[in-house]
Amino acid sequence: MRLTLKIWRQKNRKSKGEFVNYQLNNATPDMSFLEMLDLLNLELARKDEDTISFDHDCREGICGSCGLYINGRAHGPLRGVAACQLHMRSFKDGDTIVIEPWRAKAFPPIKDLVVDRTALDRIMQSGGFVSVKTGGAPDANAIPIPKVIADQAFEAAACIGCGACVAACKNASAMLFVSAKVSQLALLPQGHAERKDRVQKIIAQMDREGFGACSNTYACEAECPKQISVSHIARLNREFMLAQILP
Ligand code: SF4
Ligand code: FES
Image (cartoon, rainbow, N blue to C red; front, side, top):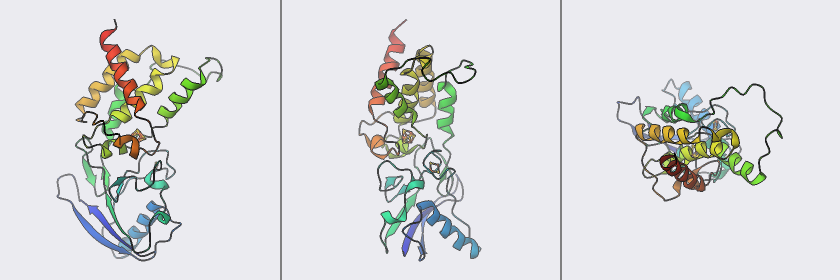
């Protein structure tokens, strides 16, 4: 495959970035998108040029590290997959591919396609956990949980913290991420004891980090690689309101 790659290059947070065009003539349809970038970096390194920085770790859709805007879509053209699970067979020979970092005030740029997403970690540190010592793993059937509730909690727990929902939202809102984290604990008995405190702390931290309000456009759900439903945002709002009004 011969490709023209239009890639955002930026030395650091303070420098002005720009798109730089690269020609890659030996990509194959079976390569993953990140392997294609590896190949480009190999060519750049052989020419003693500065390689392109991009985030990645598991390369199997689990860790949430790989965040790329590809041809104007968070994680690329396929629904329900992270950029690392995208393959070059989703593109055609001769294509021009535009690759950009997440763009959001709360995600300041670090270098090229890498942005600082530690705002999401600080949200989790503010209350995204159950603060009891649980000891060893209990038997799975020790606390009976209706299947429908377990399924909803599992869907929320699938969030990998990639930040695509923020990047896709015109208000750079983190509501889908936050709602998934609040939902997975609010739905289960283990999370009930601290639910009032948790939702208030987590929303206060979200506001401190500079994320915007929900735009109600559902762009987050459309671009989420784990297809997390905006119905969790409705639960987040209910949890927050109840925490405000109940003694
Ligand atoms: S809700 Fe979806 S898009 Fe947002 S951080 Fe979680 S997995 Fe990524
Ligand atoms: S590299 Fe881990 S989700 Fe993509």
